[in-house]
Length: 318
Image (cartoon, rainbow, N blue to C red; front, side, top):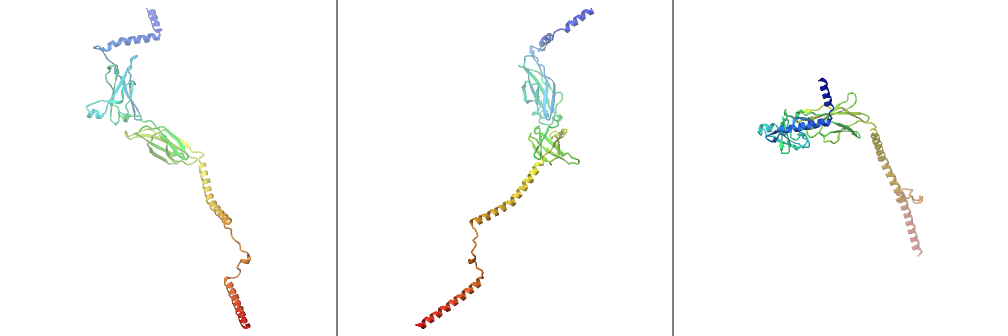
């Protein structure tokens, strides 16, 4: 008898896998009539509801309801503290998940306050809908996990540039940076990033600067851990200073040479267009003007005396 049982067991173990699949499908189809109540099909409700929340992004997930060859749709509703206390426990349809095929729903836009939220989901297949399946424990967004931010460093000349990932309007970034040397001062800045580079500070040539950051969400009064320090070295940046020095010396040289050149060109133009006339020695006045006037007056008086004597002689002759 024991040998017969062993033989039967060996035969069962060599049954092909596709045969087992067919048997399972047959068994599943045989159970479908058991789901009928008064001639109506009872659609199972989704199960294993949970919320995964990271960086204020809240995702409700559940185990799907599957039927071969059929598409099952899901609808999600939520109920916050206000709806529970002041609106007679009304449930609000999720803005993103009304008859969705995916077994998950992004409820970030629905959860807008730091209060407990109840969430529920149901399945729809054709004209049939399942019962609501409710999240076991209400969800509050202050339980979200804040991950370390992604930090990218670069340099723009001698400017330290940081770029942070855009995590949304709730996030602030506490950025700490320092010069890597003994006794260096540590600086902190609060930034709101929109995914664009930000100039952090001016750097010294030949130095190395390090940066680390963490996120902070004021709405839930919670911050993440610091990211790993990222460092960047400033090498070969002395060339701009040398160029600046040469430029300064060039400007000073121009300021000195240009006036001298203008003066020299003016002198050349003056000699070319309006040359200086040199009088001959015979035309030059060697005596003083007063002496010349006196000399001329004496000559005039002598001439007058000669003329008067000549006239008197002429009259006497007549």
